[in-house]
Length: 220
Image (tube, rainbow, N blue to C red):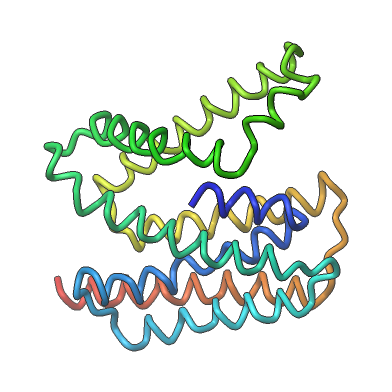
């Protein structure tokens, strides 16, 4: 998930990266049905189609379109959904202790990631980089690791008190904020079609949340 996420970010503008990573909610609906046998009401599922349409329109309207970014973004969204679903599913195995789950998750990531350094030849490239002796490089790496840890912890805490659908919705909200910040702070050019795509994603997310809220009220 993280590898695909990084490739996507390296291959596109931040704004298009956010668009290509917006399919978490539709993937949640599909994977919840396949893995958890949890059905989503038809109206809510139809609302999520607006998100898919938004991604398509946003991709078509992207000024600096990258097929690599689009594919890796979509795959990263799918794996992010699997991550949320299985985190929620297996929290009970570790007595709902997010720190134990984080420990297992990090250990597995190290075991799986280390061989990739050798298989991709990145270890040899790293050894000859001039910035390894730079203080600023290690400071940035330290801060990146700290933020990554906090994101993991917040994900597990969220999984304890909310459904994976709520996790997906919060992710889309974060995406919208980052989209606006990227267009302002980095002065990235955004086409009118891309803005239309973004607003369709937000409208689809809001409609989905509304439909789910109505469903819960009916059940009560």
